[in-house]
Amino acid sequence: MKNRMKKIMALLLAGVMCVSLSACGSGDDKESKESSSTDKKTEAKTGMTIAQNSFVSGDYAFGIMKKASEVVIGGSHNTLNELTDNANINNVQSDVENMINSGVDGALWWGVLDSYFQVGPQQFNEAGVPFAFFDCAPSTEEIQAPIDEMEYYAGSCIGDNEAFGEQMAEQALADGCKEAIVFANEIGSSVAIRAEKFKEVFEAGGGKVDEISHVSTTSNAHIEATQNMLATYPDVDCIYGVSIAYALGSYTITSQMPDRKINIYATDITPDSLDYLKNNSIQGLNGGHWVENYVAAALLLNTIDGKKTTDEDGKPLNLVVDPVVITPATADLYQKFWIDEMPYSYDEIKNLLYRENPDVTAADFTDFVENYSVESVLKNKLDAGKVSQEELDAAGITIEK
Image 1: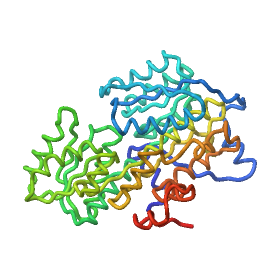
Image 2: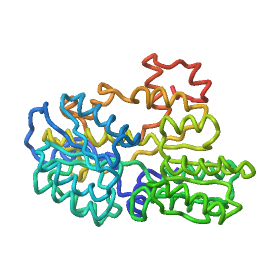
Image 3: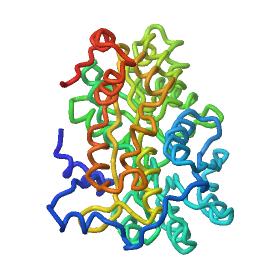
Image 4: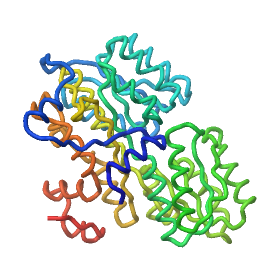
């Protein structure tokens, strides 16, 4: 794997923006730099309303991100209020005005497009509403830099969009795939980066990507596109979808083609997708990055509490979470500890909150992000007696002592 710092700087320049900074320095210097942007300490507030927007109501991915935020917000005796965009991208910007006008105490914002990140943060800041980004962030340092200077910006945590594509490309190559088509959201959206990285890694490994189709999943447009592209490229032996909707749509077509063996790889792990994985209808899945919302919510609360968590240069933390790869052998454990219950409880995450841990620093956040993995979560469950060593052995999970 690439050095973490080099990797993150590459992501920043390529369009993912998030920066995972390791704490360095020592003694009083470190303590003074990893401190609040203001010397004023506030009492821990309860009964607050924190807003979070979701692109689609009832969508599993947005629902689980909301659930992760609620662990932190609800656990600290505050309320999370969801705003739904009704699958209309224009509503993402309108969310900012709605949040401000409703008088929320803080905002967790899914901004998605660079054009929105150039407007929304300034509106939050001018209104004096603390805000943090989750899942999506500006694609360039030029856009991010002025946001980092804003008083009410708490920081961000997003999934590593390049890692999504990289992991699935590596698995497709390992499975012997040679020729691929890829489905992604519109050019310029953060998740479209997953498609470009898949192409880069797949072709570097000797494969060929015939086409990246930027097509909507509304009105089954992606299903029609799959049918057309498979007819156009008769030698395609794998498909990568940057979200599970693309993968499941592709399967409706490939399942009707018994004479062609076409592997399907996808990002976003849902209950339905786990069933497809276990049935070998989908050959590869990654995701689980929504733990980013634990982190974003904690950064936001610390800022509201007057103790913004910053790096050694006094900048807000912009962090990147690696996705996890799930296999048929680990699917049941993922179902149990990421879906049936949450991977972290409030008690397991509260050390990131200033109101619970006055000694919290940037290092605590970077350690959490960098150590997140299937193995680290299952080790906690093993220590808590929620899973047996025999279950881990059967799934091929090795826990470091």
